[in-house]
Image 1 (spheres, protein in one colour):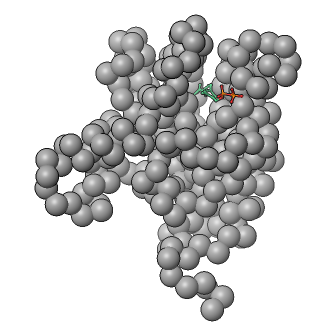
Image 2: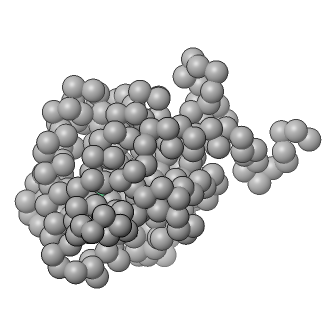
Image 3: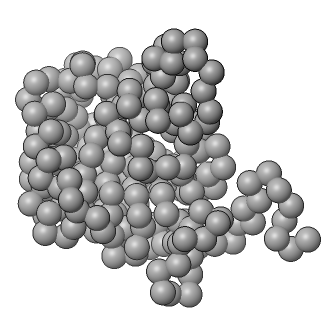
Length: 244
Ligand code: FPP
């Protein structure tokens, strides 16, 4: 493991250990084609599959995808219902493939507002892939970084905490085992340049790459270009440049 947050895979390039993606632009991509927004989400699910397969091949350790933010509950009911159905189907359909390809799947975020069927599908996917180790795929569903921090602080009950202890509390309120660690590279598609309440604590020293591509058209070449961009960054973590 390299100290700058990437790891050597035997190839010349350094692969970010933990990549997080804000998958934005499904709705606009569909609108541009005169289709409903849910059509964009379905196309987005295909991109998820491609990028997961590619991440595994590339040697990424952990991939966290922002599938549904806690603020997304304010979207029209039919869109929310379609997204929840898509997540449930995706989890069920992808589980055997994940087992076959040694991909561990887990879901971070709140579960108390999800349907029992979705909670059951999450538990089944997590159980079936628990021992897979080639890639850890995390889907963030009903996730809010700020809400997570408030709940972790509440759970601390006034105790003084180290950073590691706070990280563990963040993980536990999110049904997470805490192994994902800090984000090395955060990619946002869809042309916007903001974090939208995603992994605010874990992205403290993440390198940020913003792509103008809408998520359904984001391909493996775009993913590789983001990693290339990452390679060009001088990660100092608050210290001095390696060049000095
Ligand atoms: C943002 O695009 C996307 C979402 C809120 C949902 C992400 C969901 C998927 C990619 C579908 C499949 C996911 C899984 C895990 C199966 P937007 O709707 O905000 O797009 P817009 O900014 O163009 O309106």
